[in-house]
Image 1 (cartoon, one colour):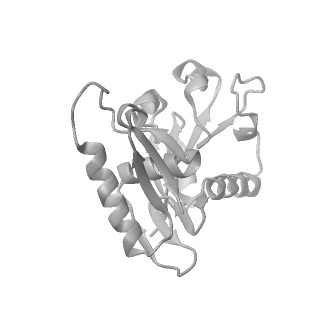
Image 2 (image 1 turned 120 degrees about the horizontal axis):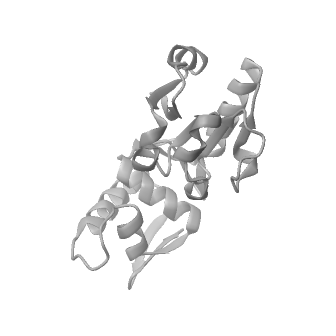
Length: 197
């Protein structure tokens, strides 16, 4: 299974990208849909030029976004995730591969990369849904969070709405973690979620 990679660009370079990044499952989208389609855990490549800067709110881009541009003075907080052109093709490919690898999340014996959750001690693995991936990635990075934050920011549910949606997702994640025999546990204490060993 190829790792997924979202590409946002208005340039007509689709064939070039498919040949350059043939190791990935590419989803190519126009820049005007970026605010609706931007994944919070999957690798996102954003290719912009002079005419595109007004389409992107750089303050809302997360660490899983790599911006490729010919502009020298971009107002983007994460300067390490900017590639300024022109670039040699091999340098571009290597930088994208390094960027995607850096998105791998680890916590004790668990490794999470794209939708694949692996127990590093026994090589057992399973696949997560996109929502499960979002929840577990956030929890593995932060170690502790509020349930309402997950509901509002990942599940897009207003905190005042009564639903068991989060509990259902957590139950499925826990079952998958049990199948790969990890020592890591997700605990609920009042309105907090914790990941522990």
